[in-house]
Image (cartoon, rainbow, N blue to C red):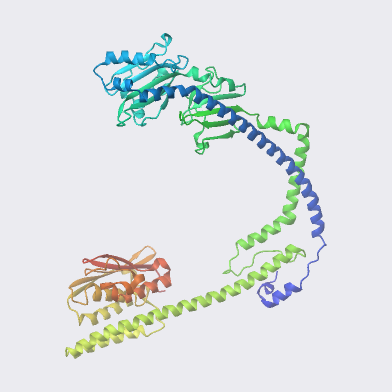
Length: 602
């Protein structure tokens, strides 16, 4: 494509408007072929999509059915354990129990009273569920009742129950039932579930003791058995996903203590499911608020190949052939249609208005793609022309703003210098006034030279020494020291940047010479940056000082127009990160610094 077409402006636009696209030469024939092949590909996609939709429907239906089963199991579990809640509710309010727990010196009598109490509650105590009922007071007394002679075994003896972590945790539950797996208490009670609840004074709400009821896991497992099949297992899992109860002790899928529920996949939901393709299992979970555990149903699902054979069967060969044809069509489509479009999109993404080279696009094509290529190349040429014009305007505006800032500083400095001259003349020190004027002439010689936009560090220091010589005729109670990196003397710096910082330290830091003090000027090279710092030991800046609100500041900040101008010049020339940095301790001094990229005189 000739660049004249790109850079011709209006002529290029007219050429584009007059060009014609020969529709029907080849593009529409290709479009018909593409439509035919696209129909065939659509049939393949519909077949594949139908398979996945059916597989998803099968999984969702199985999950819904499993959730119903899990909900039935949870309801049955709550009904089976509700009598435990009834027992603890009765003991929570019973005055006889409170009497037993508040008379620790009558342990033998309390044991007899506790047995009598329990025998009176036999309608609630069922030896098929409850193994034993334990009562602990706050004085290490332990009272126990066995559901039957068959259950007459003190599983909790010798465990120093009150000092165990699980018992201590239960003491923090504020009267709610805490359900524990026997495995977490002691290996000897791994066949039991434990229900722990505090007994409190109903009036003062103070803790009197603890009730611990043991429940046989087998009795609870009977509530799960009607819903278990050859391909389905139901478990109880703790909040960590580990199995608390297995319905069948001979279960070959999982054992007690195994992790059956991936808690990270529950997303904090009360119920739900997830499908593990690698394990070929559908896991459904239902949270039980009474125990804090999960009812988990695991169902074995057919493997992907089995499902594929069920759906496709003898058509597997046809499916493979269709996939081959679809691949060949995709290759053809890419080369004839997609590749040119991708080339055009890539050219648009990587286009840079600052580069002169045009992207490599085929502008000789006589179809719609060639039309788009030519239009984009002409648009890019016009954009580059406009962008170049815009850059020139912005640079001119930037130079004008910098010149305005320099002109704003010069009258400010000239005013302060002439004030010194007037002071010397008033004091009849004409010779000194003459020296001041000579120094002023040297300063103005540089200031009034519009070509000297930048000075070397050595020239800036000479400029600064002439300025300080002028000020020392008026103020003789301040000292100046220099820390200059010799390797920085040839570095270039925008002129009249350091003098306003020194002027601020002298007139506002040292209070116009009324405070004796010291000003230190440091210029150092730090890697690729030139670091300049002016530090004084004067009054410092007010705590609320801000360069952005010069007019609102008081004390030292009220006359800091020089700092504001320097900060604006730095940001305009080097960006927002190039502004002034101010560190101050009120009453102890301040330092003003900036860092700019190093540029050396050629």
